[in-house]
Length: 269
Image 1 (cartoon, rainbow, N blue to C red):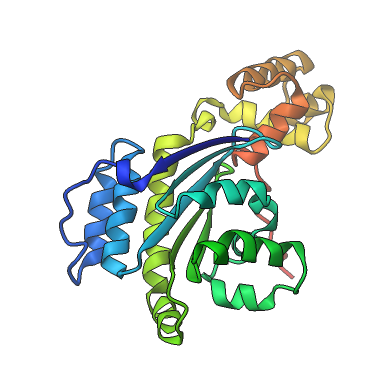
Image 2: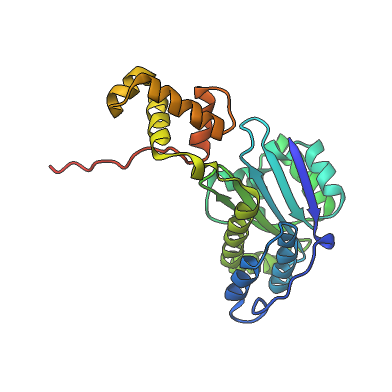
């Protein structure tokens, strides 16, 4: 796993127009649209926290560089020991909040997740050892999936564990969701390559039928081209996707959204 962390304190600050006013979302959109360097995303997160009056944030994105060892980019201002504890306690596999964002598109409220964790479980040990030990008691997290295989999470958190703060987080959760969507789109633009643009329509068709288990000869018959031409297209697609075999090319094409199931034909009767 490749981890890259950009601390919020070191990020360059941007000019913010309407983020602190009633039209905060329009201001946020303008600010993120102006981002030309990935390090500036941390400054946006800091401004969001100022707007929400919540002290801590974490924006993390998993990049589709590999199925088994994807790269991970993290921007946060969590207490310094949190990162080491997160890795030590296998947070990517044990963090119930993160796992919750995989399963639902709606905001994940930390207090609800923590209350549902079974006492004595690995997840409970993670919560006590990495989250509560550092005083991060309340928070809300939102997950975002992208068409190119990327996945991002935006969290805002506080040391305040009062009922009033929990109600407040539920009230501002829609803003967190909108802000995270903008951050996800911007990070995708800056960090995620789009080899799909180089893959031709004919190469896509060959990859699609390869995914269906068709041989080069069968694909050629379906597309009215020769077997040799199919092989040529698959080799070109593999080179563009930076893989060495047809199987890898299909897997990569699926993960990046280059090929996907065709629209369903609705029966007429």
